[in-house]
Image 1: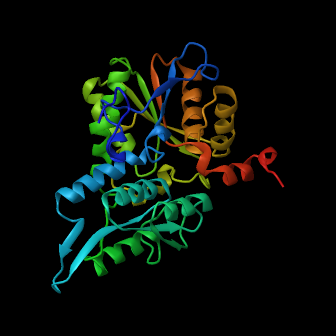
Image 2: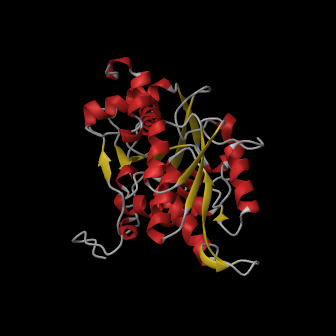
Amino acid sequence: MNHATRTYDDILELLPSEENPSPMVRIRRLAPLGSVIFAKLEWLNPFGSVKDRTAWEMIRQLEAAGKLGSHTAADGQTHTRGLVEPTSGNTGLSLAAIAAARGYPMRAIVPAKVPRDKKVLLRIAGAEVDVVPDALCPLPGQDEGTIALAKTYARASSHKYAMPNQYENQANAQAHIRTTGPEIWRQTQGNVSHVFVSLGTCGTASGLSKFLKEKNPAIKVLAVQPSPGHDVPGLRNTSELGASKLFDPALIDEIIEIDYELAYSTAIELCRTEGMLAGPSSGLVFEGARRFAAREPIPCGVAIFADSVFKYASTLARHIPDLAIE
């Protein structure tokens, strides 16, 4: 592994770390006057999203516990235990790609409303995909929902599957304590004043807040949520956080709610004005940062851009009529 020459022996050596951070790029034309806002481009992680961090941390944890790979079951047979996980797309894709690199099978349990592009990508990465009726993001407490089905696989076929469970696993937040937080601190030379994140499993928000506030309690961590009734894949507002055990409101300085349609229009604005091919969650987060900056200046803000536009072409075309091509 040589970060200076970008030469690697293994695709997993590209995963982000303090020594190999995802890049931060200043938003020049759209940031309000008097504020400095950087976009942390998580789509440049090897498997395309911020969830590469979560997936790798959870797999490392399972490997350390001896729960993945070849093992002898109670019946005396040798099996290869892989992964099963409920996912709205990005975590599943990161898990599937890392599992493939490590030689593990993967089964993704996906809500029907997840964009087709993401379902196909999961299969391209080698995952078996079960599509079930559920909300856009997996919800708890439903017998036929994605979370319940994944837990059933993990219990009934424990010789075949381990479930990382991104919604409850503290490794999700630990990934950002170990990597994202130190990266931001180093990249801003300790000058970061505000961090803007979206809410999904809440691992990013919780992990970043824990790390950065230990460095400087004055740093503000602001969560940007879509308005109710949204269809932004992977995101939740606080009314939908029942599935996550990682949300701690004490770690968040403010929650900024944005009309979910702006996730799409602001993503297009970032593409066309800044040359940043941002996905809808990135559009939502930047819109929240821009709204905050209209109230008070941001000396050194970092907006977590979770993934790019490439998985969302059909979704964007549905929301932005002039994108549709017959």
